[in-house]
Image 1 (cartoon, rainbow, N blue to C red):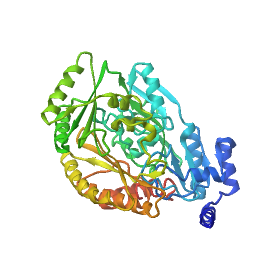
Image 2: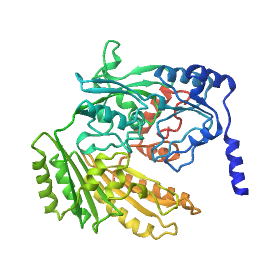
Image 3: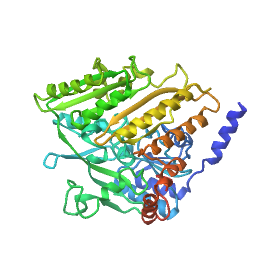
Image 4: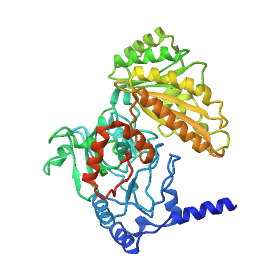
Length: 481
């Protein structure tokens, strides 16, 4: 009880309120119903899917337009109050919410604004979730080339773009950023701009690469360091005529990697996922394959894939899990291992945390890291904290693959949190030593440790940050800046 009281007292000592005149000024912009300074709300927004320590905001604001975001940023600049932009808090990387900041929850900016069949694009508010966009598009016979990242019922479009979240469908459709045409962004100063063709006051958002450098790309993966994404225009395409699935297990993961390389060289799959660890079959790897095509072509693609997989020792498996994974986007990850979604991230009734490590690697880099990891895991699994390897999963991209390593630790074990974060650091060292490139960087010391290795690249980002945000108001610490 005394420990609980001391922790509560420490937390309360950090929770300051904004000056009354600032709260009133913000409330006048968005309305009192869209502002809260209640302690319970502020504490809840200090927590995300990441287990890293974060600050407690002083005020939560839910703006409804770019104009409201702009006016709030101007107030923050004038009063030198940090701003943090919140999508849904579903990232596993450190978010680093600043202590006593104004937190902008983008949930009210959640509308589908326009489906343009002439330019084959859709324009949406940044706070809309991917599942809503896909649902409306499919009713009109369209879909997104990539289906968004994470759980599509909870991840927002703006948050996914800002974090460069790796999407479902990356194998054939490319990254989240590849699907972005133009962005509306509010800069730290409060000035609003459109990128790409929409920068022309007489133009529309349909072309990204124009008017000089690719300014759209500056904000993709920036973790909110350079501006607040308020709208996005994305590519759309017609729903394919056919869709089918395949699943193969492999006794040897190296053979599975070689099969994946052959499939990707020939561009046969819409999506190719290879999972290891906690498998439902006696094998080292399980491959899930989604194929889409014009009418009459799917059978041929699946036969080519079958020939490749069998040549490398693959065994045909039931495709129910693959099908459910692709179509049941609210519970997708569990189906990669044919598991009940309710049990996927559980250890009985023990609460767990997942210090995730992830990044892009070449095919050879994946093979190198996999060998290193299994050597490391053979020792780690016997540690006193009894970790569980929940996933060693590869989403194959056009030029390599994106690897996720999910290891679960109990939140009830004293010392497990510090130990788990050290494991994460070790995994990132391994990943970077194999030529890996993380997509979602996050903030704080974790981000700084990664980005500080990048020499001139990191220095240029610092220069851009100082130019756009000289008072370091917006998402301070994002990208380690």
